[in-house]
View (spheres, rainbow, N blue to C red):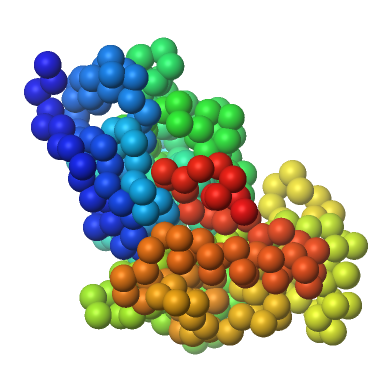
Length: 358
């Protein structure tokens, strides 16, 4: 008999930033590592599928809900451990709010994650997706990840190299998907380091030759995100989203040339990242707009944000089926026009495989 409170038929919509989704058959919040072992054992004895829920910011839940146990990681705590060369490692529990931790690092004058301010969700989700924005990725600061192995029923720790980080990619969402419950992430940050100002959009927030502080850069990022509807603000009709719904596609030079020819204009292009030489990253938002979908477009109660084409929003009372229908319309249009299949970014919970990929 577990000491953790396990609830039945818990609606999941309120645990997601999109605000859609049906009930979990069972639901439990865990506050420490021992409780994780207890709940996993409870679910295993009943042969229940298990889903680990963080901040719900990158999640689309089926209207039918999830016929298993949803485990919400509620572990809290931030501990700073100094290492060589004056750098500090922040050992952060997986249930900590991500933006709260970013602000803590900025207040401590530790550089490395200031451009990731304003991203909703919890710390435990950041290594899974290799969260990144405005010229930074968590992969460059993660020192170690601690997790519970659902296969071996024991705890394991991974170095950054062992996490297999790439663009929006890690071992935790590919070859080891659904195998680990992340309980702690260690970040190695730079005391007194200069902020990262790689993105032109962020650079334009400051006068030429200025030297903004980490705090000023973090606030500028939050303002930019709010202008795009990518910041959770009460009363903002465009903030009920899962963030960027589509990944920026990585294509060959030939594909990029074809896109330019079809669109009769040159698309913005960015480096594809380490290990992807001769490949180019194109903005999914640009492709979507060129395929005929403008900001503010609606399909029933689902729509595209008035502020950012990549954000699909719940206009009020939308179902996950309506969100998916809009996403499928967009994907089909982009594929037919440019021959590029946009990949959806949110985690899909409770869907049949075919319906989630159609």
